[in-house]
Image 1 (tube, rainbow, N blue to C red):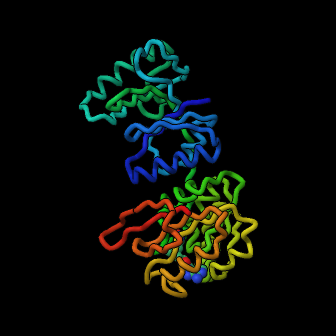
Image 2: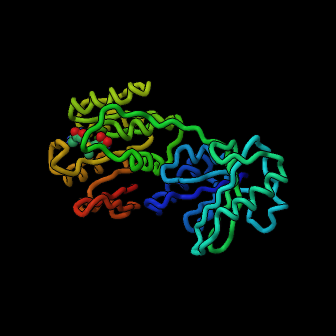
Image 3: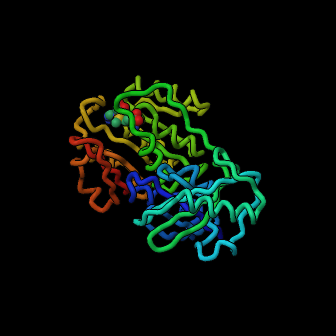
Length: 308
Ligand SMILES: C[S@@+](CC[C@H](N)C(=O)[O-])C[C@H]1O[C@@H](n2cnc3c(N)ncnc32)[C@H](O)[C@@H]1O
């Protein structure tokens, strides 16, 4: 078992934490976690990079070495260059620079590695919380974001789309369907994580945009120009439905947004994982028991992510 640390960025804290836990559970159902302020420690068989590459709201991550009781007992990996970084999640004021210098001197002595402040091959982290301080380290995390050449005013924030896919507990090789795909934000995020995707949209212009956005990244587009009920025909090929429902006058819609939610939820098989985002105020009885997260956008728009 490995212990990894993840420091959340501070945006949408509950959502961020649940996303992280869903990713680790999707790879290892036995993974365990401990949450302390914005710090999440995961004990699992999964290397930290596999989780961090997918997680949307993680600022720092790496291998956890242990609690800072006696730094001289901890074994640091050897690297050409390293830097120390203090992450203060406590309510105390601290002199981060001074602490970084002190730890740097100790690590240098122990490993013989050279200090390099920009682009070091290893970063040693000291994470200070009100109860304990933890030491960890990370080498570089290489990761490429998909590009999106064609944008649109009603497109979903990619971070929300990515997070929703992660909440669906899927992993590489699984398949999602977004039956209101618009410009393909959710499909792009899924493909970038190795999850196969199928999009449906009743607007042929949106289907073309999605195809182009997927092709620009070398992903093979599977986009069907139809109403969302086409999903019934492909349900055996889909592990989860992740979607962003029409919510306003800006997105062309066949009927009222609330009626769409009602009809749509009723046709997605109950055994299929469903993660959807819609405008607050459009709740329906079928989603009473769903886990929900609110995302405030501006005074007249709060969105709700629901997991059924
Ligand atoms: C909120 S937008 C989705 C935006 C998308 N997530 C993105 O990032 O671009 C909703 C989409 O649903 C489509 N739509 C509306 N009613 C539909 C229906 N009955 N069946 C299929 N698609 C529909 C619209 O054409 C629109 O592209």
